[in-house]
Length: 506
Image (cartoon, rainbow, N blue to C red; front, side, top):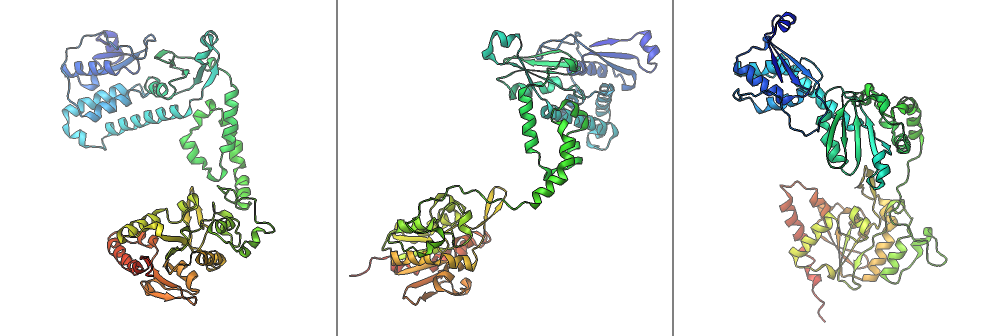
């Protein structure tokens, strides 16, 4: 920092009595020292001129020394003002130092200023700080490295090649952004060239150097061609918004972005490609677990309903080939019941959920966890039950990466009925709990208003007794304030089955 008061300065700047020259465009330490000295001398902003002089390249983290001993007292300012200075001083506007000193002077003379967000000086400083932050963000987003086999690489190939990028920032942000790249590419030797400053990372330390010219940047390499191929393939015409793209990727950056050469052509082709995408038939979800190609001798997938399994494993194997309704084409796998032959109580739900579909077991998702909690409260053991669903495949609607449950139709439940009846024939339970409308309708062959008939026993034509109650998923959808009461009412329904849980009296 250099403070002068000479006739030439007074002649060029009649209103200015003091000229301040800072050591570099981002000399925040020098600005703070000068500002304290000026405030101690009660020097008004209108009588100070600010300049910055470039200094020789030095290590980025070298100690900054303004060269002038300052004994002026410290000044108490709001913390946000110092943060504002750290950003505004990186702006390219040559009047930024004068603006900051004027704000500092006014903050001390006009205490109410800190509570006036519409003040012209404050608004201007905030806009400058925002412009600097945008420029820093763009540098992080738009730097493109190219590999160079420099002398260090030829002497020590294990250290890897040097990666060099060219960037043209709008403001003095290189020093401020360099630590980000050091953290991001710690194991890589790299250099970023800009017209004003250049910075290099040798794998251990950052070094600041003089500016460069665009011609000094390396030519395209093989890695850049891979990036261009990737960029063309991920370009989504259905999501193209040119105005938003140009806002986030201003045209002034395009000349240094290799992918920019394709933006115009890809944007021009977008309407045609978008209509082509719309006209295509929807793609079918890929099955996570492929269907076995082995079917019982002389049987096709369409004839799966004619199979009469003799054991539960045979039934499970046969159900994997069922295509009597569309659900089986999209689900991961069929989920049949589990439990022991001879269980006195069978529990029938609606259909597998997302977790059941992936794991191949019934009642293991959120509804299954609530059901397990009920078993504990009732004193029942899950292994004493046979647990299954009326529909054996998961019906869902894709929504992003999620699969949202959809209720099976009557036709889909009817197509699956023979699998449920086969399980009943193999297990031979004394009682069945129908959880929800789909299970009750499949078991009783009619529409069942669950809320009206819950807690009631119905005897089928074959003599099997069926208790109708809610599906645990319905409790999960209940308002949280009513869940405790709804859960207790559900337990009271289930308690009616406790008599069937006891061993039969011989």
